[in-house]
Structures are given as structure tokens and as C-alpha cells.
Image (cartoon, rainbow, N blue to C red; front, top):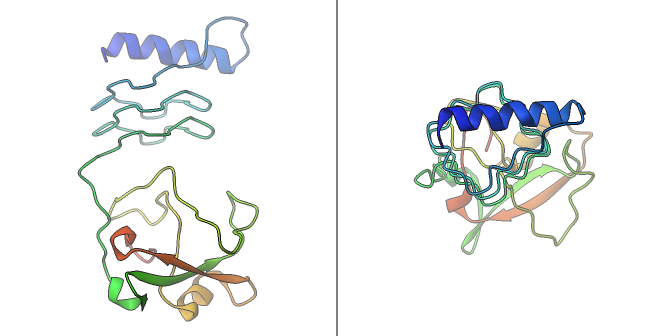
Length: 167
């Protein structure tokens, strides 16, 4: 997408967010935003569904409530499966542990399937998007405390990604 067109869309979106009575929500669905500088952009409630974001600079971008379904951040990135041997094995799956409650969801329920709409394979950031699990109950207690209710999680080893001290 041309830089000038993107800047106009972002400007109009900001005015729309500020209820100025003009402009409209950013419609960037299926847009090729590879390499775009979106740093600091306020994209809350923007439609980015299906957008190609590989190489886009998103530092400081505000994406709360944005539609990021089917986005491609980097189709070549895969979870690193680092330290996956620390997890208990269950056939083709591994068992991990996490808190039942989380900031973005009221409570994880037994027997349900959960997935992360946004997933990062950044090796250096501790706070990357995804669903956090720990390989042992003891490690989960050490990170989140003994008083938090924990649940068992099953996932495939190929879905495990470790960044710093989190999986």
C-alpha cells in the first residue's frame, strides 16, 4: 500500500475514533502492509482482517479491539519448540500448566479448545501475544503463585514457543 494512502486512512481512523463526526473506521482488510511503518498508530477497532503484516513495524501500535483475524505477521515464522523436553508427554501431545484465570479471559474452562488469534515468535520479548503455559506445575506456581487455581493444558510440541522465561 502506498505510504500516502495509508497515512490518510490512519488519519481518518483517528478522527473517527475521536468522534469528530467525520471520517470512517480504518478498512485495511487484506491490505499488503508488508514493511509499513505503523509505529505508534492507534488501530483500535480497525479492520485488519487478512492483512499481510510481514515486516510491518508495529512498535507502540495500539491494536486493542482490532480485527486481526487471518492476518499474516510472518508466514515463515514457526514456534521454536525450545525446551519442549521439559513438558510431560501424552502421546503426540505435551502437558503444560497455566492459571485458570487470565487478564483477557474470565476463566479457562475444562474440555474446551482455545487458540491465540495473535501469536509472536519473537525470541527476545517476554510479553509476547499467545497463550502462556509452563512445563511443570511447580514452575507455574513459581511464576504466578501457589494461590492461583491452575489447569492442565494439552498442546502439540510444534506449538510450543519459548521466549525468555515463558512458553
